Length: 185
Image 1 (cartoon, rainbow, N blue to C red):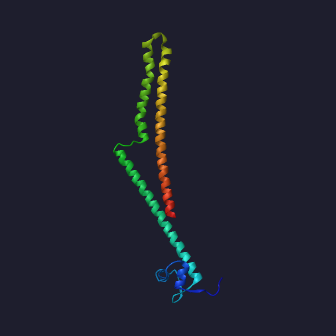
Image 2 (tube, one colour; image 1 turned 90 degrees about the horizontal axis):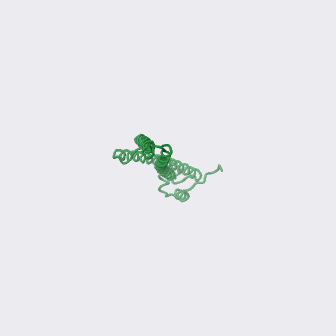
Image 3 (tube, rainbow, N blue to C red; image 1 turned 180 degrees about the vertical axis):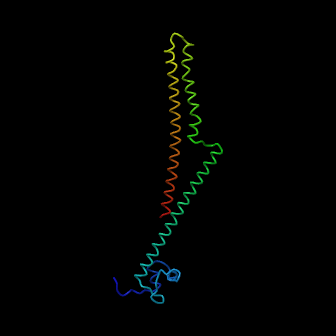
């Protein structure tokens, strides 16, 4: 399609590109240099359209990069704010780490289990010294059931708490990904 250039006026170029003639003049200035004039108010149609497309593409890249950076900065700000909130709640005694809870309560539950499991040996001889093994087994069964229920309930509570924390973290990630996607558009 090389050949004689199709020369058009500033107004015609503005109409083709859907921008004002003033914007054409701005983009033709020494500072912008998007369009190259052939003469006073005259432009090569093909070169001008190609130059404008390149200019628009570059502007979109720059905007996308800026939006991505802004989204990442927003994400990091949110993470820092969440961390500060957790630290404040810890200082206020409103939350406790699961590991710390397990560390603190582990010995308590061990002692509780030990004490409860010693009841059959202490109680059976007092009830009927002739049937100690049978009575120990009878007394021990509901204690084991209670300990098992307690263990299951503790595991369930910790599991639910962990699941909620995972879901909250996942929602935050989804919001960040969504915000990042919207910023890219």
